[in-house]
Amino acid sequence: MVKPPRSIHPSLSELLDTLTVYQIKEIMDASNSESYAEESRAIESDIDDLLEVSDIHSIGDFLRLVVALSQVNLHIWYVKEEMQKYPERFDECTKLGHQLNGIRNQLKNRILTATQGVEQSGVRTNLGTDGLEGWRLSILDGDPG
Image 1 (cartoon, one colour):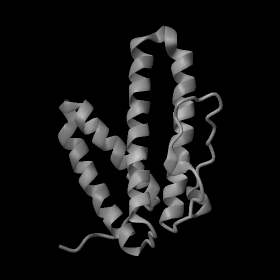
Image 2: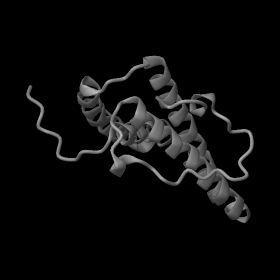
Image 3: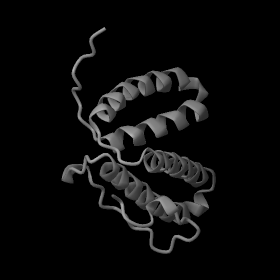
Image 4: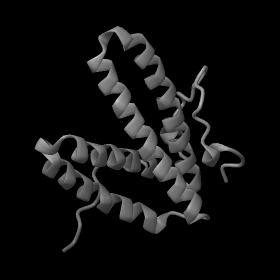
């Protein structure tokens, strides 16, 4: 079967981010799990295409970035649940969610760098984590290249 050309051109980091979110939703929202699984399969195809032309120097580092991205996305999910469950903690949860999103964007930027796909349009700028304690990710330390 011949695949149609990609009509939307998100970066590999955006596709991986979306895939991790759909994977979380597939587990957490059983009523729509098949829909999320179907979306995930479509994203996998685009990821395969992009990986074929990517120049990843360290597969291990790349995989650690993807795992860390998935973990941060899961924590963001839990923060959103906490926000809904305890409205009196809304401000605290909003701040934590914003800080975690900063880490998420750092990871996505590093994935762009790791795959040699650094396009200015794909770089995320919200990297703020002021006041966030206990969230040091060693994969984000050191040289991104």
